[in-house]
Length: 405
Ligand code: ADP
Image (tube, rainbow, N blue to C red):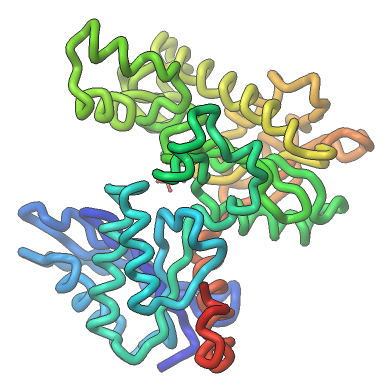
């Protein structure tokens, strides 16, 4: 056993994993099992030395895929396992050691995340069977946003729906937003001031953070609310559902598929959900790609400006996720639509920041205007750290199980 934490992110047909060493900055082994349930599942991973490995896993399910991962770890056995769990409802305000009661609560939250929580539980079940003696921790995507005030998390619909069915805004990408908020506290002269963090990947969300706590976020009861995403629509008029059902005869499933799988950048462009493709195509004059970029940037700017209402003061804006970290074009276009809030981008710093690097990209000489940062996210590192911290307090928690609730 070494000091590493195995981080597991189990989806319905995939398992992402990483072995995160105790010391930060050390190289990680990380990989992916994909196509579980299809005819040709396979395992790929890159070891600590950068060597790539690939194995077919014919007929594998979650349990046998975890077994294969374990075998390929060889003698690098972890000291604990951290699971990404999508929905923790109102029950989980922080990471927690997994026991039977926690598993039951995650099951109860599955009605709010029917696609994600059951898959996360598959992973937990498989690793508990394979590593019965290792402590296991659940780290929730929603937990960071449990600090939102009621006026930010309630929908203006009848109160019974909140009380009886938990219908409210929860927010997601919490691990990423928490990591970036913490990093800003270390990097910025404003420390833990007032920040808007834009996590822009295939899924996109923006969060208003004050003194390290989430005060509002763009995703809601599900990860469909808010910004335009790769294939998800983000905000639409709720009346759209009724219109499609009554006027066009669509079923609930068709509406759900359209909003989650065929909308966003994909739906607008008719070309691709991938920002790299769209930037290229827009440059070549593709009108759908141009429109997709325009709507994406405008809605991002509008949402960030709205989120500033949650903050006593706006000290800065930070970008992360595949698009936020790598696209000077999107950062520049979104910020240019927020002139009223005063961000002053340095075009040179924005264009020259090396991909995957952390950096400040505003005109730093312009004192008084919000700072602008690009910070690569590290969800795996954050899950590993939260796991390690809980495991260190294990003896205390053995005597005070209520403290892990
Ligand atoms: P996920 O949300 O699945 O973790 P990522 O954070 O990896 O996804 O983000 C994927 C998105 O990042 C894709 O739209 C991809 O096109 C975009 N992206 C990655 N590199 C670049 C780049 N150099 N320029 C523009 N977009 C990029």
